[in-house]
Length: 306
Image 1 (cartoon, rainbow, N blue to C red):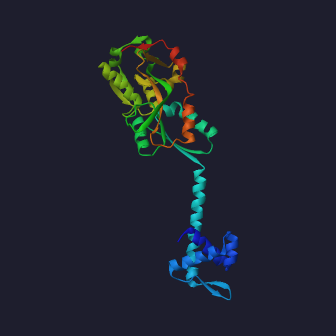
Image 2 (cartoon, helix red, strand yellow):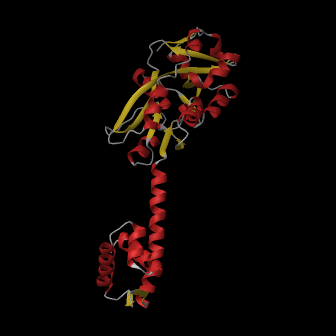
Image 3 (cartoon, helix red, strand yellow):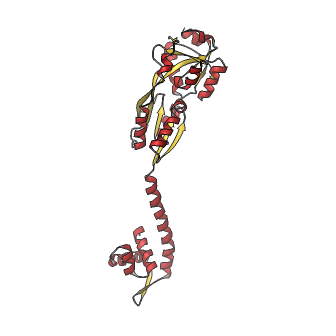
């Protein structure tokens, strides 16, 4: 029994004539007759009575007609929904907090303008969580700054970024033009949560140099980190992109790492077996256009030497 047989049966029941049903379905009359025979053999019951060359639906036929119309209607809805849905591209995007705070609004706006038929969903989390969600097929693609551990994920480094050491303009270190390890060990820090790419990069650098710091505040959001810098005399390792307004206003001073060890890239990440949709290709090309805020770096004359 198939949907095709049920559709033929419904048409015969509506027209009470196999010739008319065949004509409306653009089928040969023999095909229609064969379809009714198959159904009757399948259910072991006569579906029509044939009297004086006319068809009369039987009780068994009426019973089948009731359910056949429901089944065919549901099937047609499924067909319509699937065809409509397949014309719409879906994009499940994960971004780290740094990326979400600096680039995501622009990215989503560009998707809206250039990919209006793309249905997108965006999740903000740290690098470790985004990696796990891509591996579980809960996200299609991620934009992260941290290190990806799984060999099953492809990484495309596309956007330059840089960590800086930041302090408030009134902090004791703000008057210096060069600081070192001893200065870091002397003052409290605000730090991102575990799993953050920013935290991992910064602490790995300190570990390699044998430097120990005081983490007094753990803050998962850039605004909380900025407040700890501005109002709680904390030092912070943070993306220069997140302090653009404060640097321009002079309320925050930054130190660049002379070694370049804090240079990094925002990476587009997806599963090696993933189908690369047009929206993912668009996202790849879009990220290549984002530049690092070099003017803020060039204007800076404070450095950290480790």
